[in-house]
Length: 206
Ligand code: M7G
Image 1 (cartoon, rainbow, N blue to C red):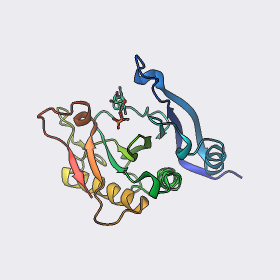
Image 2 (image 1 turned 90 degrees about the vertical axis):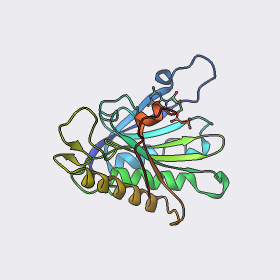
Image 3 (image 1 turned 180 degrees about the horizontal axis):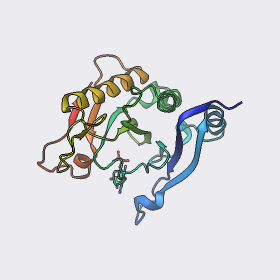
Image 4 (image 1 turned 30 degrees about the vertical axis):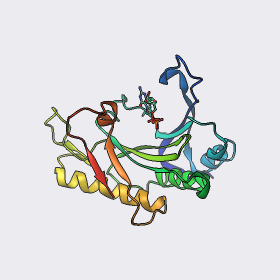
């Protein structure tokens, strides 16, 4: 008997860039899609742990149909909660990433029907490991749309939209078992893509 997940999920991998001329699209690879607990463990037990990945690699676990890119229609108005672990040797990154994936596929990062979580990401970098949760919105009305589509769906107030996002941030912080004094930050993808711009940034912290 297979235990079905609420959503289908796709695992993606970013190969480390060899240096010159590589573009993002050549490095991002779709690995596999699954929709049961048993398939998840089968995959997990057969792929390289994060601690074995080369610098500049990423794993992305996203809902089926959503590419792990800012440009995806379901991400382009969104953002991410993220935290960088700079003491790489003092944490168990494999365990932290496993629990982040389990929270995503077990749908415990948000309330049912919120539909904000698009996926989770781990980045392997020289100075840190970073884990992130990508959301569909930034908790503010989508600029220029005026259709009231905020976090949580159409017709919710911006206050409610922000609450939903803050809740995701708090649950994510618990999954990462961070002490209260550590800060987990949210930033909008558009802000990241135009970093340095003077436009108002979507920033939240928990
Ligand atoms: P990163 O992995 O988010 O952060 O982006 P890092 O600076 O800590 O490594 C690294 C680079 O990958 C970016 O500067 C982009 O060139 C590319 N990149 C990352 N993401 C998530 C995207 C994306 O969604 N779309 C595009 N086009 N490029 C991306």
